[in-house]
Amino acid sequence: MSVLPHAFRPVPRTGVIYVTTEATKLGFTTKDTDWCNLGQGQPETGEIPGAPKRVTEVSIALDDQDYAPIAGLPELRDAIADLYNRLYRKGMKSQYSAENVCVSGGGRAALTRAAASLGHINLGHFIPDYTAYEELLDIFKAFTPIPILLEPERGYSFTADDLRREIMGRGLSAVLLSNPCNPTGKLVEGEDLARWVSIARELDCTLLLDEFYSHYIYRGRPGALPVESAARYVEDVDKDPVLIVDGFTKNWRYPGWRVTWSIGPKSVVESLASAGSFLDGGGSKPLQRAAVPLLEESHVVKETMAIQSLFREKRDKMLSRLERIGVRFDRVPDGTFYGWGNVAALPDGMNDGMTFFRKALEQKVITVPGEFFDVNPGKRRHGRASRFRQYVRFSFGPAWESLDKALGRIDDMVKKG
Image (cartoon, rainbow, N blue to C red; front, side, top):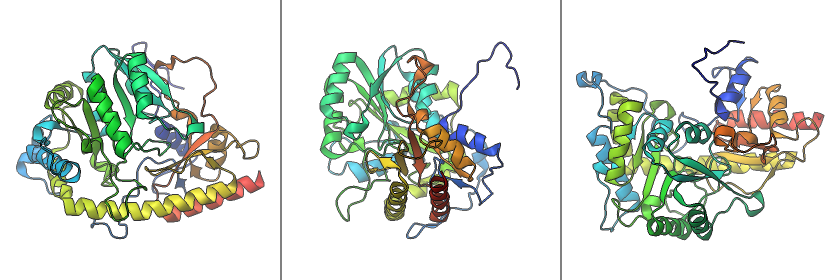
């Protein structure tokens, strides 16, 4: 085991990186089709029925050898603002412009810019939520992370009245959350989300909304585009304290492009760009240029409807088979491509998240133990037992062939005990 020089600290891996690292020790590679990765945090990236053709080539112009602007190419920022206005703000007086958009090289870069821009405040975050939030909330010392526990018995619901109580009772100046939630799939939408935005406006509490799964929504009106965003409920784009983070990673199924954005008040975007100037220096110029035509509304509608059809079917099949095996779900996910399963009823040796993960690895199936989503910045909450020790996150991001193979192996594993 290598020893760190005195100047460095051990840096933990996020849940997905941890499980793939452990699988790699047993021979896992992304090219080995015998392995089934139900731990992956990306959707299948190939051709799917009804979706636009995938981009397979990107041209590089002579000036693409230069740095891109820290806040992103102007034409890309303009295309993002235009898309949000068309999807969520038709007929509204206040409209997003390029100055409301800050482009970055990946979702973590966008979130890191936001975290680096926060002041000495109390920042609320939910448990369970995205694993990468843990280090993000610990590394920047200006703000104090305040945990907000969501209860399985309530299906992880959290009402606007709950939000008001937490903001006022804990003195929160900002709240960070993924919506739909990774890992539970819980969605705050419609009138509920409108009330969240209204309360944020009234109490001057910034909503930092990770909307990377906002096109993976399995509720809503028949025939309506299955998307949701807090952008729909903002009154004044330059005054309402709402910052939205999204990108090509999930909703366009191009995770390798690392093209993401934050959209919010111009004053906040200026701060994000300043933070980006010393944190990451900006994203890829040729990929930003190639991203512009993919933001055309017709392309987005076609891609989103294809995602909705395929991933709803995969969700239903995966949950049905896991429930027959004995995995229990506190709620059917409203969105994302994850099932948040309780394995407590399974036989000994696989009835908590970590032992299930280890046992499944022997079958060349990767999952993510639930304890990684028990976000605990700085390990300030003592005690070894996690509230989600008996949970596992199952991804239906992979293609159905891999899902089917994995579920068959898990079935056999449980039957054999």
